Length: 82
Image 1 (cartoon, helix red, strand yellow):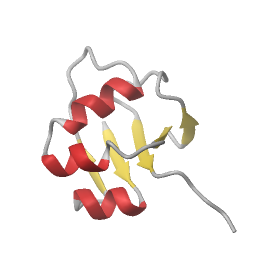
Image 2 (image 1 turned 90 degrees about the vertical axis):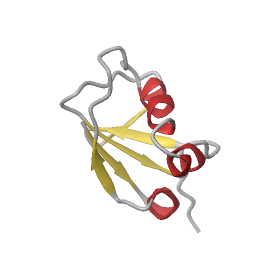
Image 3 (image 1 turned 120 degrees about the vertical axis):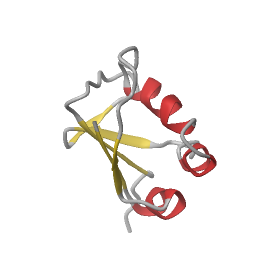
Image 4 (image 1 turned 90 degrees about the horizontal axis):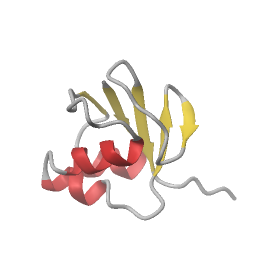
């Protein structure tokens, strides 16, 4: 699974993307976030951001969206305009 981090998340974690192999029981975006938080203190801090947003295969995704090993999952902070 390819994980991509944008904006402040990339700065906090220290990488823009990484390949991971979560266990088979990780089936949703929310479960993936919780699993990723255990990888390091930097992951835990960055992925605990309020209103964290996600995309699965470049489509915006809710926290209950399904994920699989072949997916690309991106995380980013809320977007503001102005």
